[in-house]
Length: 122
Image (cartoon, rainbow, N blue to C red; front, side):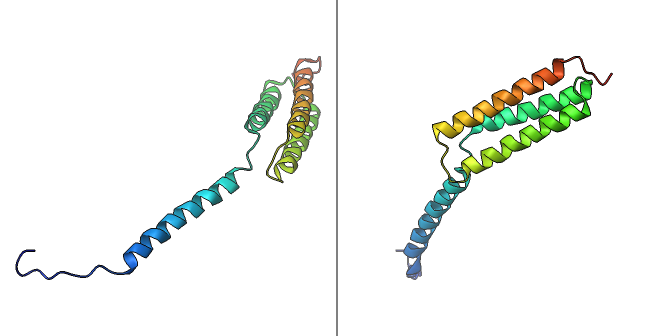
């Protein structure tokens, strides 16, 4: 040790600070897994966005009337609520996933029929 320097003792809580930080990081990681674990149906969520866009495009292009759009949006709302109920317990079973997919398939058919029927806004 060079002359004139005084050895300063390490603070005793340095070791504890590292342990506390490590525990904090682990807890944060665990909490984020719990919070983000609710999104167990990314494919279903993507389909919801696409179907809503299809409805909006149909209204904008005049292929879907206002009355048809109201019904289609109500159907989308029903599917969205069903999805939230399914995800509420944190686990989506294969049966629940199939049920959501069937509802979305039915809604997709309804959107297609509304866009391609003879009723237009033009």
